[in-house]
Length: 337
Length: 198
Image 1 (tube, rainbow over the protein chains, first blue to last red):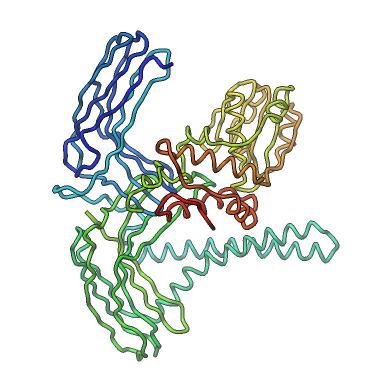
Image 2: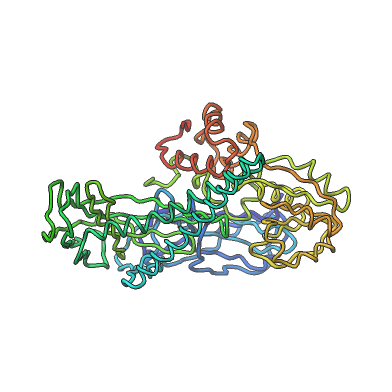
């Protein structure tokens, strides 16, 4: 039997940001015990495909001292909820709020109790978080450097892979069965190398069809219900058949699990709105394309969220689908408050 | 998943990423024979296998069984002097103070690279265990652990029938990580308590 048991009682479980959370910690004492601190904490945590992140927003020590067997004690507490983060349930990422009570009992397992809350948007505006580096607008020089690095890495991997595979093939011709291992190893390297190399090449090829491209999504700081103004204009360098030009409003979840060589990022994109600017047809060289429109942010849009391993971000994605040519794509990250 | 997982009587997706301390409790697997081997003297067991096959899980199971210190070599430079030490990502050992293994009695190391030459030079006799293959029983036990870990309160929870587990093994073999990913996605789509199908 434990020396004491804790139970949390909350006034309710549904709140809005900015509300006051009221509750009581009930302590049932089974044996005489000294408590070095009964802590009550308000915090949030993530769960899903990414490593768990979390933060204790507030902590209060509600009692410190002896407890006698056979007694029950009630310790009230109150916390005020901050404007964010909000409770969120997505595909790869979930964010939940909780209240936790824990008693520091010497020479024993510290008993604890936890209760979950749901926190919806309140009246106070939410300040969107700083966008992570990959989501920030890069200048043309940075884009070129990024492309060169990708291309270099892809070339290296492909080169190593093809060399190993070639050596393996020669070994097999000479009767060495170990050559199979080199062919498999080299083949895998070459496959990944080509994949890394292809992305910047495809993007480069696609952009070669375009000149004077302008893609704007404004404002970049948004709230639910806002309209995102979309403006797209470009000229073509050659006669081209277009399958589609569209801009999508996407809520992106990026959850990272593991670390080091075991790190994996799981990305889930949910398209919540789409604006088709053109469908089908042929455009002539030097013909100017210029269209504008608006995408509405849903009323229940979740705010942007950034923590160590989990990100909920919003973006406007322009896609130009050329017929018989690599597609062009560009993202503008938005800050949802 | 607008209501989270409460409607499934779950606190979270059973195949979500656990906290490191929870991962220890979730580990499945009988490592008693390895634990016995490690108690026979100056021996090193090297666990070799691809990513996602359960090398780290076996080291954590040994930690739970033996109470031995577990060191992830990517994150730590410290190799404690202990009767048994458990080292993860042993291919990084050459970049760490590997000579400190002389102070250890026995070791279990996960690795992609054969460390037998280094370990023999340090005075260990080396046993190599290939980590691959996932049995149906092992998968059943893993799913059961995960469901109990995620369960919210007494009562029914979604189930993963044997036909689903057999199908997963047939498709993905011993790639535990991919099987966990597939089950995560299935649970994320459940609208009510029932069986998970693939």
